[in-house]
Image 1: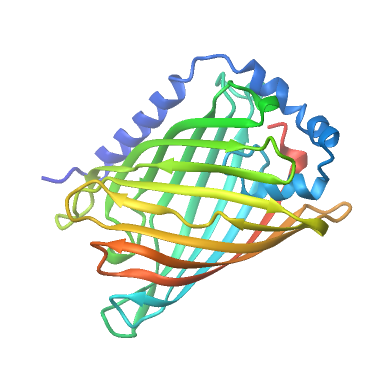
Image 2: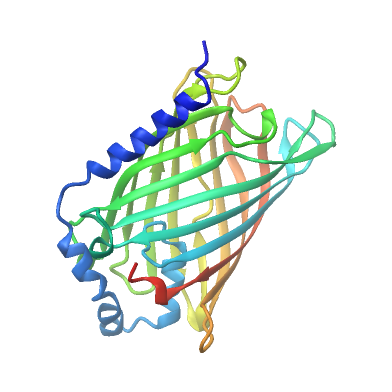
Length: 302
């Protein structure tokens, strides 16, 4: 038996409310060290563009920004059709003194428009995909001065897809954990782990799911605002029997553009190759990603 649309929505909102109220630990150090970032960067010789390059690729950044990415896959396993995914994402930080919460909170909603195959041939259709929500609370230790930043919280998937194969047709919630190290001025390294678990369904044909997503992140800044990175791929592993495991690898370049009186912009391009897959009848073989991010440093005091 499948729940009515209102019941899963109420459950999801209740889980979100509980996750907010559960953050009761103090985070004075995280907030105080927020103002120390520029001083630490200056002392280490890090330039403004190098600092921005790392923040643009840092999933735990408190820099407000809007992110746009188009991922085009000309070759797929299991179908002759090319596919495409366009993602629009915002990062909305909430610092402690401007929030009812005692921790720095990072809210990251994502919506997508996907081009998917109709069958094993070359025909496609374009639909809206599922909405995702990343809701992380920055841990107050060991503190920003150490260079290590960690966060934990819930991650959500909402079944907003407009076609059955454009999404997973299930309400999902699960844990997330991220860790980023920025102790070396020109280097960003870390990872992000998410594991959404389905708990309610919009169709009798929907299958239960529990999938681990592991995103490794490495970025190296070079001169003139340029950087190289391997940060766009997510490794996936389904916990249920005979569900897909996929291990893609990526490499890309990008540049941060800073103009007086204008928001900083990050432009990037990266390529991805599927290094390993198991129980994945349909999967991307090669993917090219084009990304643009616009930041709003003046809004950081939120």
